[in-house]
Length: 108
Image (cartoon, rainbow, N blue to C red; front, top):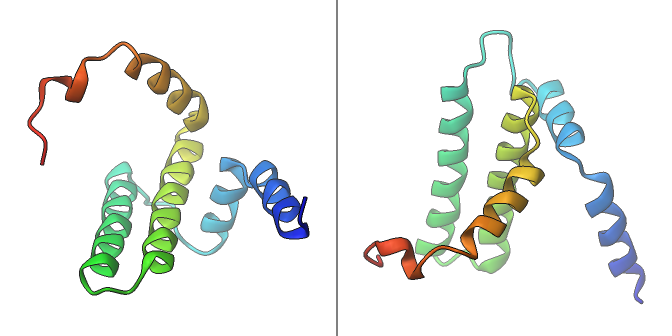
């Protein structure tokens, strides 16, 4: 196994929602007057940045960087609210196995 892969596996195990939240909080992303709406707008802005990277041909590395920011914003929100986002993802993934194709929605 390569050294890079070992470092990635270490980071994946160490990068908990609490760690992500604490860094974001230390950098001012969760002030005293923070609201859930602030957090959701932050998620939306990161998704928009990923879309801009795609539209402007900035490459997959920039797109995935912005997707990473999106996931970290979601992790931070969950931690701030005292929720376990990984448990929610797991439960939703299991639930999705029993859902119909496209859940009856039109594909966009």
